Image 1: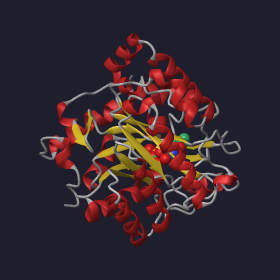
Image 2: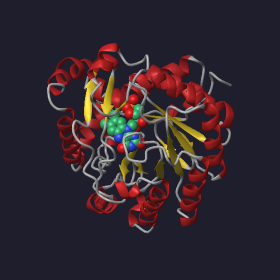
Image 3: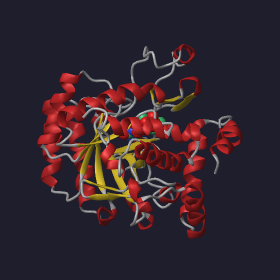
Image 4: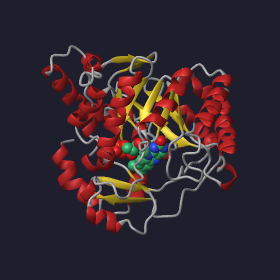
Length: 372
Ligand SMILES: Cc1cc2nc3c(=O)[nH]c(=O)nc-3n(C[C@H](O)[C@H](O)[C@H](O)COP(=O)(O)O)c2cc1C
């Protein structure tokens, strides 16, 4: 698919409909197409970009390219068969919670095209870990790198730190005994969703240590990634990342949504428009802050923990910037919604071009090149 076909023809039609309806349409179409090898082949031929230049081994996992789908798009694990054909190198399913949650009150997604953002207020809408893993399990791809993002059930009962930890640990224990574990490349702990009750309460040294220790005690033999918040003072962030390093967390994912409604990166009209709406911002408003955090974490901990960078990636140039600041891998959601699914192949192709132009022999050489 050409980018102009999506942005000039398809997007104007899709954007006339409710965002959640369009999202569900995409996931059900993707799920259906993923079941047919002919559909996978056609997509792969028209969208995917492969090159040895982009291959890397991170945390013992082989990645065919550095571009992944972030947690929040395929939250019930419907797309594991099709995303490889679309061009992705990996995906985080979820965030999945132990118990079912229908999601926060609508509207849960609001498009903000002027700011190239989405106001997100899903609050861990999830079918619950048992349903997600068992319903789609036989269909989960064996060849594609899939991780599961796990967070605490969004309920009153789980709104205290200790209850959140128990709930998260229950999910990790469940997955540790499930045969799907064989198919998974990594597990992701989400301690950073701003749209849930008790949000952010595990981002303290005491509770982060506790949850990581309990997860480690389960003894799951898979890489562990942690999804981190965007807005945090560096001194506090440093203490928390050090705890992750001490608990052998393999990668930190930087970062989640933006909470600050006064941020300059949100256009004035959008600030007014969302005044009475709940939610937090994805896309471009997160871009600079996430880049800064990537750079800080890379400078301080670059040799000890891998970084997955996300927030506002709309082009190869955006992805390359995060890589040059220290991210080994990148993820996205909002860029794909605004620019179309062909963006993934375009980013991969563009990354190779940009990194070759800078004289690198493979993408790994570019990681952190701006801050070294
Ligand atoms: C519709 C939507 C739902 C999201 N849900 C989750 C989620 O369940 N878990 C999570 O860790 N992040 C979630 N996020 C945050 C994204 O994973 C990502 O951190 C953020 O949107 C910045 O990346 P982007 O600018 O490429 O979208 C969600 C984002 C969007 C747009």
